[in-house]
Figure 1 (cartoon, rainbow, N blue to C red):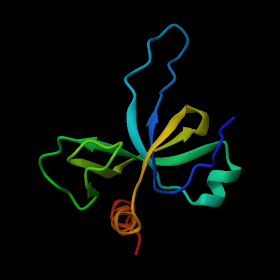
Figure 2: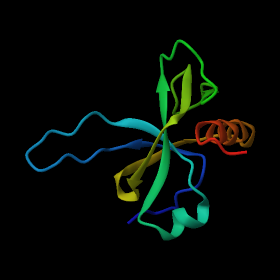
Figure 3: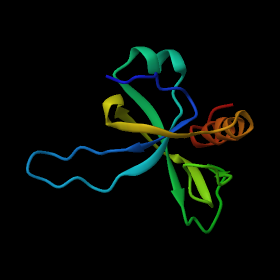
Length: 115
């Protein structure tokens, strides 16, 4: 049972589950982009990948300043979205600021062709 709810903008280490008999792939950083009400009620949440080492910035990439819990040079890749089971998220590592989440919102609109 999760002690605190998942909130939009929280950064987690995703612990992927592997099919029976297979070894799980490596853990990855993700940021919750689903709204807080759905995060509280649903058994899954929508996340965007947090990556590092991206050379060319695209309109769906949002640079994240190096903060505690995130490596310097991290990028939220809004072109890499996934719905994951909430139980597969580890402890919250960081929380993105409101200005950073505003840039994520714009990148999500671009990625999904929304106005």
